[in-house]
Length: 153
Image 1 (tube, rainbow, N blue to C red):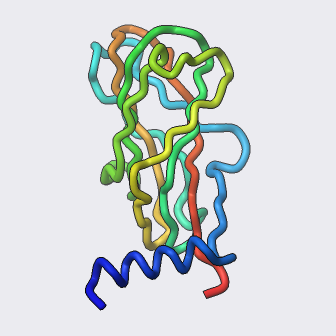
Image 2 (tube, helix red, strand yellow; image 1 turned 135 degrees about the vertical axis):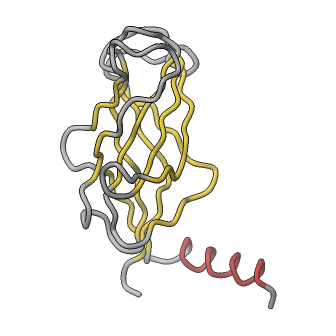
Image 3 (cartoon, rainbow, N blue to C red; image 1 turned 180 degrees about the horizontal axis):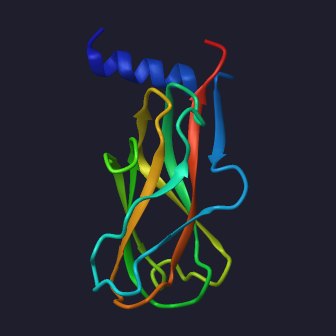
């Protein structure tokens, strides 16, 4: 059996079993990702921690994000989900978000599933940063991560 067939068989075995558990992180309120009100359009903000180190299972898979807007304001944004210690984060995925594209209303969760899960090993700290199409605005979005973990293996 070749690598593609083994990968497919392994994935199918996990999906059709009781070995996958989905969790949402962080526990409690979502993490707010907003740009600096003094920054220009499409300038990356600083990273904001979503999940502290050792808070997610090892290994786990980043499957998607839930995005909530605190206010209704038309903007486009890119959110970068990253792992690693503060000031040494490495981007894992970039999610494009358009408040008008998702027909976002205040307080509504907008789920976004990644095309493929991203494996995360070592239970690292997870963080997010944002860049927006609107300058001089604190409007942004809050998010939670959809995490899958294999259990019972």
